[in-house]
Length: 84
Image (tube, rainbow, N blue to C red; front, top):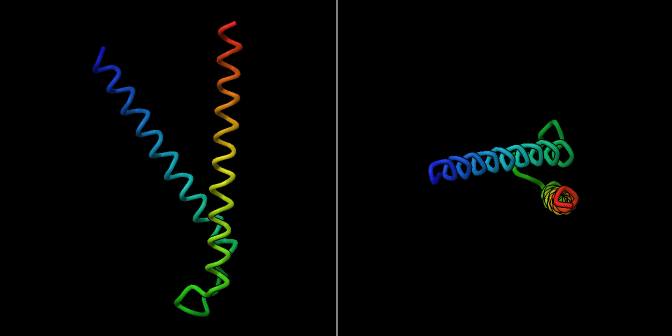
């Protein structure tokens, strides 16, 4: 039984890593598209681009957290309904 639990834990960890990598890739793509012009005029990130990236990342992570909390609440409600 302990081996089964270890396998389940490993599977959960792998799924979490995959989800985090997916979120990072989506964040990178969205914020790069929004904040960095397609033709680079300078090798360095400009101040305006940097501010845009900071705001974009903050918003993306805030929304991701809100959605996670809401999904958690819905999951708990579903579990409560199933127990009844």
